[in-house]
Image 1: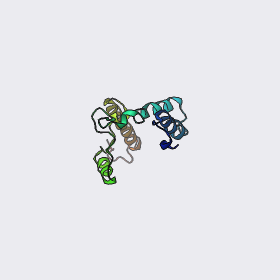
Image 2: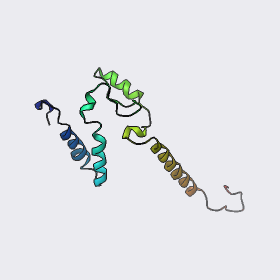
Image 3: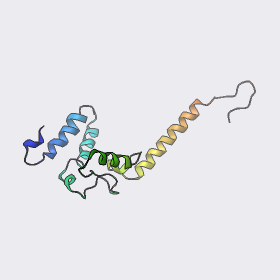
Image 4: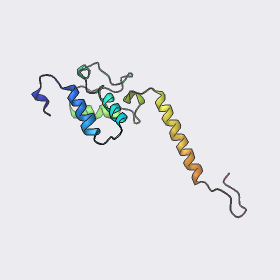
Length: 126
C-alpha cells in the first residue's frame, strides 16, 4: 500500500491490513482478532496526528515527536520495563490479577518439586 497515493490517510485500510492480514493470519480465535482490531483503532486514527494525543490516561504512552533517531531511543528507554495495563486499554487492577496468577503458578510449581516424604528417618523439608 502506498500512502502517498491517497489524499487522506486510509485509517480503516491500515487497521485492516495490520489487524486482519498481518496478525489475523496468526490469530485463530474470532474474539482475539476482534480485540486486536479494537485495540489498534486507538493507534490508527486521525487523533494520532494531534500533538496532545496520548495512548493512555497517564500520558506515559504517546507517539513521540518527529526528530532524530536518538530521541526515539530516549523515549523507549524511559518507558516502564513492565508494560502497564493501560498500554492495552485495561484497568489498573488487571496488573493485580496477573500478579496473583503468577504468584499462584510459582507457588504450585515450588510445592510440586518438593519431596513428598522424608527418607531414612532424617528431618523433612517441612
